[in-house]
Image 1 (cartoon, rainbow, N blue to C red):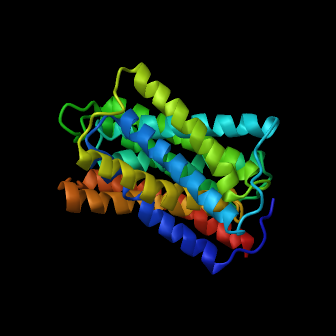
Image 2 (spheres, one colour; image 1 turned 120 degrees about the vertical axis):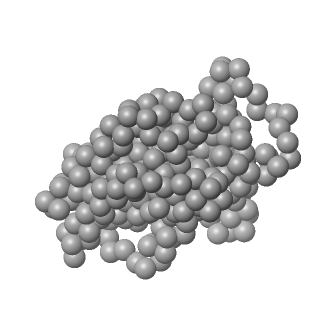
Length: 304
């Protein structure tokens, strides 16, 4: 299924999204709260900011009367929101069991799954290079699983094997989220789609957080600053921009560039958290990113 010719602006938007999402793991660590708490506040504040932005654009005459998903579209939006909540919750908890570099690399291996979804569900055509790249990416993730099982460096008190399972589950959840978004964005604007999805995700994540006995209030002002930055940078400046791209590019073209996140996150973790990046980790990250890079190069050749 073609999405028309892309423009330099589309890729500029994705470049900004890459920079912004790279800050997420660092902000979660700096906030120092349970991963579910960080995810809930990221989604609560992200929902409020999205609603305000949509209302301002509508009041200024820059947006049509917003469409509200109904029927099947509403069910899909709810499913997308639940998937997004699970992605954030599971991945953010994994950050306290794995190094930032490993956690982000695992959760960002989703393009290998989206290659299958795009071909089977949306009829997108892929080259041999893309299929080979998907296989290499999965081998990279399998290597990470093997390494974590042999005692990879982890945050104090963390369980690397549990961290891998959480990050992998978070990856599958975000693949579902992007897949549903690819279909709905054809009928709704970016803000019309993201507002109900973020709202459902915020409710689902908050419910999970409270069910676990974690509190959403009573933290220090510095913690709330980091949580607010989570909503502003990687949420609105990251996920919302990716959802914009989903309406203009193919599934892989809109999501694969975000695989620059592991590199950016690893650099930030080194600079801010003093977290080292060993040769084994770097090699496994490189294998995973090589495979996903092949998926992107193969797609661009197929579109040429």
